[in-house]
Length: 139
Length: 217
Image (cartoon, rainbow over the protein chains, first blue to last red):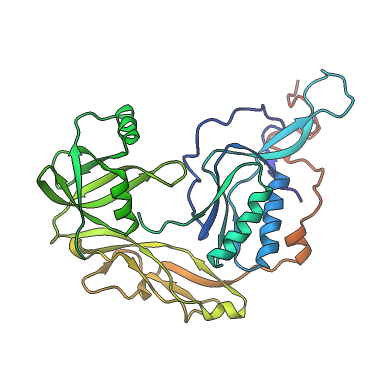
């Protein structure tokens, strides 16, 4: 099942604007290695899931993959061949708003070269530029 | 371990704009405090400081134009990519006083439980210890080779160097070997087709669930 919230207060969102850069959720917190977004943008639930599947497939179910983002925002769309007007379209899919610096995925329990290979495959599914990071121990 | 010396300049101007200008010149703004004295703002070479930081240095001898003192690196703030330091905090320290610091933990060895299908969880990557300022261990390297599935390494199990006391709860888990939650291969790897169901609305009446406007009139 595609990722989406279980309960929402409002079904439809305004488009909004991704301002500034990530001030939280921008460090490796759960695993040993991470994939960090270098540009801002919307990442759809399908892309997030595709990244997870690519990593799980590459890792042969070794190690642990942590997804640090969740699609909280619904994006509405009008059906094809519909005249303008008649109100806002129905929610079509869900996206995560990602700021530059946000940690997208983390991997733990595997060697660095294996984690790097998995992250390359995840990055290929992402709509933004990404970089591989290793957890910083100490200061 | 010898304490590295780094040259720095005191500064009187403080604030975001000034700090930004300092960084553009390849310098790093910082502040010194502690021992009940007045805080002092300073700046030093960013490149030189990064090299020391990479070597795991905790104590610095800062030279303010011939007047040098020993300082502990208390905190380092990084940019939004967690890549380059943007500000540092130093605290005045006497090499013979006991201080409380966080020390990172790097696990060594491969747990034997991994052969049985377990996975190593590194739960805590640093602990708080109390030691002499001159004898801060750079990193602790506990071995996890003996951990089987279901076993855990706690803070109390750590072998600390002489003169170092643990300031963390000894029962806190540092690493554990757990079995991975098993799911069916299809569900884990391929995922299911997206469902057309929508999330439940909080506070919405049942008849409002499919309403376009989301308002009840």
